Length: 174
Image (tube, rainbow, N blue to C red; front, side, top):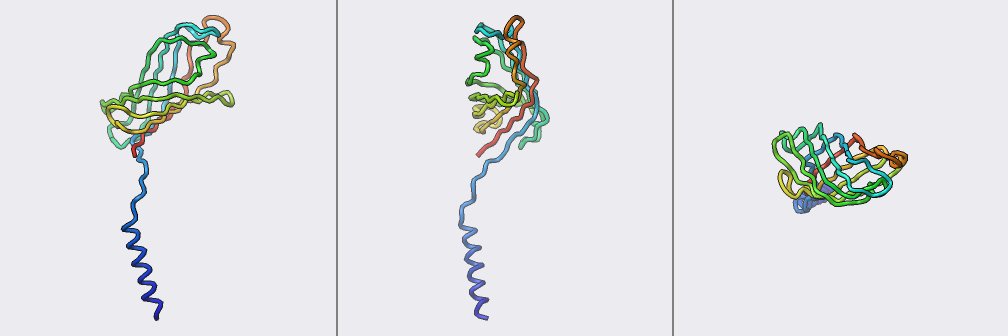
């Protein structure tokens, strides 16, 4: 019978420790989306660098979100730069604005990295939502394209498009 007070003391002690112990801080997901991204180049990319106009469009659907009104999204980027087929996959920094089905926007400042394996180019954009809905969230977007053939780059019209490739977006906050 002496074991009962000892067991009771241990249970009470563990319960007290559980109440006093700080809670673990986990990230919370605000948005996850799947979709597609397409990139177009005008003029098409060749082996030698030239000034081109690049247009990036993304469709994000379906999305699940902490905001029940965010069920889809989209984005578009447009810029001119010096590119070639050999510099196409270089890292870069940038900004894009997500337009949500809720009518809100989120500005995403990112750094882009690329990996090439098995005939696929994976583009990873990592950064933060700097303004708008979900400001302060960490954002990661990955897009997978079929690796372009170098034969496309040898003569005009050159490489005129990438994609559409599957995209996955995740926004989390601490």
